[in-house]
Image 1: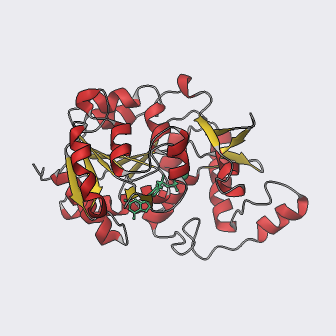
Image 2: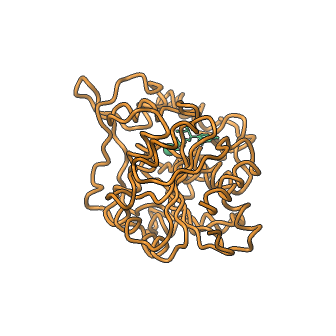
Image 3: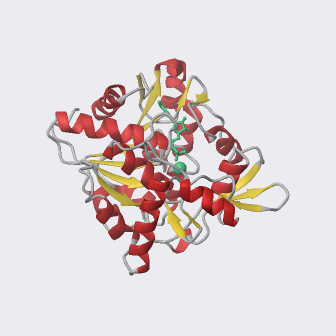
Length: 321
Ligand code: GDP
Ligand code: CA
């Protein structure tokens, strides 16, 4: 049943999350529905050269504000790298990690407010005042629970080093978020989930974007207990990841890179999981019976997010699920 003005909560990571969130905003505006609440993964966050980076938070903020670099896929449009060159000359930071000048402005502002004693939730609210985002953004938690990658040789890398420096070429054994067992959901997160009509799981990386969000104690239970419909969107199209390294992450946790396997990984809410429905790409229509066999109603829809319109159509399909 399609609710006329649904209250929507989205769980999201960076690139897939921001493309999806743009569509959620557009679809809800057409319905005159309230602004959605997006609970953003902060497992990618890191300290570098004294500043706090929040890659997924910034990807979504920049995309909603329309100031993101759509060609490169990350950072600010029209950015320059003068400060980065100077940092490299000092041998500071990471030589393989580029920080744009405008982007650094964001990190400096954020770090200053954190140092002043504001929580990440408060800092994000303050950042959202600059642009009319049309979405309420909440970090998953105010605790620092940065993702680490455990390697075969016993080594351990920050997720950003594993991905940006090594391009996910070092085989991961596991992903960990040290401290997450003691973390709490950011203020407002569980209330938003409890009072939602629909919870959407974005087509984000199931392991290192949605995984950490659900691993914050209290969030998974809130999703399991809400009266809202919980609808997930497959990040796998035609048996492949669209972009990024979700396939490597899925392999590490023993999940096949297929729409049905990811659905089973999230699980049916009726069987201890979190899903009431799963959107499968048209290319994977043959997988629908396998999803349904796991107790999860499957909806076949076009899942390529080429632009805001195609992304909004995915939200509309999810709201109709
Ligand atoms: P990250 O934090 O930047 O890695 O981005 P996310 O975790 O939010 O999203 C990454 C996932 O988005 C990848 O697994 C991709 O397969 C998926 N993705 C990217 N573009 C699309 C798209 O157009 N359609 C769908 N269904 N998934 C996509
Ligand atoms: Ca991310």
